[in-house]
Image 1: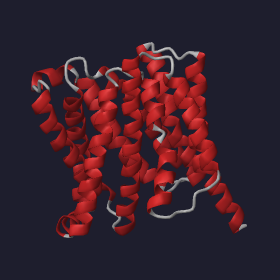
Image 2: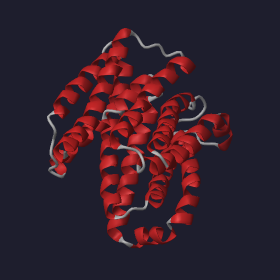
Image 3: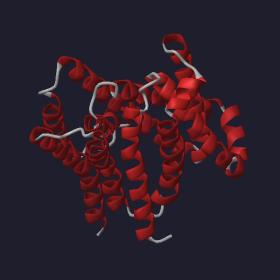
Image 4: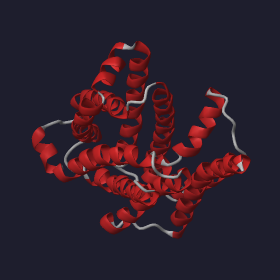
Length: 297
């Protein structure tokens, strides 16, 4: 696979993830957020499970019977459950653009958390990125109602959860490279916990889930299953710098899709806010790569 082909696949994954925000928002007309998370994750699990059984059968057994790996996998699934459902619940009130860009804040948050937990080097650009992201977040939320501002606050917490999720993924994959098995365990944790909460607080029925079949299938099969697999296949073949920019385009695709499909108009303040966050996210990913490349010359 060439770098160009890999980049095109990553762009497709980014497009799927971005448009999935619209499906998440429109898929709760008849079901609650936890029911939606349960349904989409169940489908994603069914998509990835065959890949794990075909390519990683022995690895599944090792994860299950090696305590350290299992604890990390289950913990990652729990954090994933929190992040996914905070985001899903917030989409009851928040705009798609807000959801996508505020969730993207996980990128600079990962760098800051890694500094304190793993003592990793913190590049100077992180503070510029943080200022850009804080300013952008303010522009996205300041002229909203209090109810929507609280909802946007949940999206920030979702971003924090996804930051820890990314870190745990990195910890696990450095110890044991088994992406499909690891994903299956995560999805199983999310679908079980989402079902428990949904049964406790929402009206769960197959009939109502059928009414949201398109959104569930799109998020479950395309976003959770197909796009995840595309990322695994393509990211190892793509150059890090363009890959980082392409994956950051997820939020842009989400904002465009929300505008076209849901008529969620972005005023000038929101456009500037989105641009600031996107710039901050890209700087965090590209500047360290540039500095490392210069050192190696």
